[in-house]
Length: 390
Image (cartoon, rainbow, N blue to C red):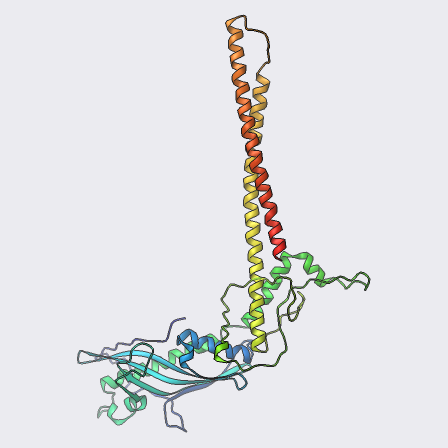
C-alpha cells in the first residue's frame, strides 16, 4: 500500500477547479472536519477492526509509535497523527509544505467512525517530522480566511494550491482507510483458517476419519487427532504499545502440527472469528503452523518424485546394460583348445573382447545398483523425517 506522503505541483494558469472548494466544518470547533460513520460489510468484529486500524496506521504513516496518541481497545478508540507532504510554486519559487492532522477512529462490531480534523500546514517541513517547519499555521487561516480570496471571490493562486492539496490529501487517506477496513465478505483470518483446515484434512484422510467417525466404546476409545485453530473466550485486554500485534493477512500460513492447543475444532465445524487480541494472535500462530506443515508435505512429495524419477532412469539403464551383457555372453563361445588356424585365433580374440566388455558392463551395473540403493535410502529418509516432524 502506498505511503500517504504526497507531492503536488499545480500550474497556476490552469482553471481546474471551481472558485472555492467546499470544506466540511465542525459545529463545535468551527474547524474543517472530515467525518463519517461507516458500516462494514464483513464479518470483522471489534477486535479485528481495531487491529486493522493499527496495521493501516503503521503501513501508511511509517513509525506508529510517533503518530499513535491513543490506543484503547475497550472503547475501540484510536487517535493518531496523519501527515501528507505537498509542494506549492509561486513566482519561480518552490515551497515545501506538510499537512498534519488528528485522526480519531472508533471501531465497533460491524462498523467504525472516523474524524480528520485539527489540520495544520507547515512550510519547509522535512522528512516525517512536521515540527521542524519554519512556520505552522491552522489550515483554516490559509484557505478560509478573507485574505485567501481575490475581490471576485476566486482563490489567490498560492491559497488555491493549499486548498486543493488539503482536500485531495485528506480524501486520499480516507479512501485508503475505507478500502483497508472494508474489502472482504468475511473475516480473512477465519476464512483462511477454514480453507487450510479443509486442505490439511484432505491430505490427511486418516486424521479426518478420526474426527468424523462415531466415538468408540470406552474400552476401545483412543485419543482422536483433530486439526486445531486456537480460539479462546478470554476477556479482552488493553494492548500496550510494546505489545503491537500485526495482523498480516498476506503472510505465509502453515498447517497446524498435531499438538495440544487452547481449543480444538473438528474439520466439520466452522472456524469462529477471534473475540480478543489474544485469540487473534493464537489463531495467526496456528495458521502459520498449518501452512508450514502443508508446505513441508509438498516439498517432501516433490523431492520423493524427483528421486523416484532418478531411480527409474537408473533402473532403465541397468536393464539396457544387462541386455547388452546377455547378448555378449550369448555370442561368445568358451573354448579351452589352442587355436589351430587363423580363423580359430580370430574367434578366440573376439570372444576375449566380448568377455572383457561383459566384465566392464557388470562393473557399471554394480555401480548403478549402488546408486539406486542410495536413492532409495534417501527417499525413505524423507518420509521418516516428515513423520517425525509431525
